[in-house]
Amino acid sequence: MAKPEKNTDAVYDASTLGTPKQLVLGVQHLFAMFGATVLVPVITGLDVANALLFAGLGTLLFHLLTGRKVPAFLGSSFAFLGGYAAISGMSESYGFNTLPYACFGVACAGLVYLVVSALFKVFGAKKVMRYFPPIVTGPIIICIGLTLASSAINNCSANWWIALVAILIVVVANIWGKGMVKIIPILLGVVGSYVFAMIVDADSRANFTKLVGEAAWIGLPISWDKTALSIFGKNFDGGLLITAIITIMPISLATMMEHVGDICAISSTVGKNFVEDPGLHRTLLGDGLATVVASLFGAPANTTYGENTGVLALSKVYDPKVVRLAAYFAVILSFCPKFAAVIRAMPAATMGGVSLVLYGMISAVGVRNVVENRVDFTKSRNVLIAAMIMGLAIGVSTSAAGAISFTLGSVNISFSGLAVAALVGIVMNAVLPGKDYEFGANEQGDTAVVNMGSRATKK
Image (tube, rainbow, N blue to C red):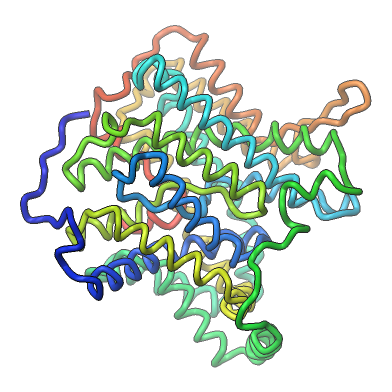
């Protein structure tokens, strides 16, 4: 990565602005990450308040482990939605809520960050990243979005007019919006469609009145029955635990690529080389540990957020202290059940409309990853790798079984389409001759690996 140039017009010490302006800037960062962070728990069935709590705590942990140098915010990751859906969808067949098992699988995915962090420290970025080239991660990202699209359509079908309002607002805000409007199209789409639903749909109004009216103003954000640790109770199933781990862990290969891209993008924006100081090994460690802790306590996986990079570029205030203020605000807000109830009362069609855009953009980001890294599809090896990844991911996911299952001793194990595709892609890339990817050789491509989710809507 080329050494970034420091911006002489920027503010690197926010204390010079005074406390009131610092607080306002912190709120701005909070709202930038807000839409995507609360949408992930709504889609997965996890608690909104818990997601906010561990987004804030995860960000503070990340800043602690990186020497408080990197102005990054950690919020809910969309990349793991396929994993959550695959495992929580087994609840009916098992006779109990399997969502905590998905959380445990995500926690194990966070541990992969720790392993790769150590590899970065020992061997350096170039040697490690050659095993996760765009020809592997790009098609995986594409398939994550495609496998989720049907669930968005199902939610949209509850009321297509409400869903269309959400879609139109997101598109208009992203294409024609200016300043902050362009940065938070997802949040605007949710709010606009939500308000429209309250006006035209009596059922949505009744549900809102019931849920919000019954919720308290102050309460604890953690629901024990949704934590990963709760699986070790009466519903413990070893086979399901192994299935969850095998299904979800490979997704971390794609999210680590997004993390590297984010750190490069923040470095370019701020004018400081965070790849070297504090180093990718420290940023990966912070992101991974934040994901492990959040998942164990029933919150979504954490990831660095591109929305906040957009805010940095807009405001030119690069002091990490401002991002930490946003984290404190998120923690405070998590202790308000009344607020969480407002989110839970969101109409299914609103969630469907926004999700349809997000899932499509996840796939589009995968395409962009391949294009900007100039993957050569005249080479048979690259065509074969992409073909096998996409064929297995989509084919297995849409098959009658929905997974590849087998029995090992007395334990039933299932591999999701994404898990099979990721493993096959990595092995094929490692074995087949003709590898031509070198991390850092194409700065534009490496920094373009953006977050799965709402950040894609501003590209």
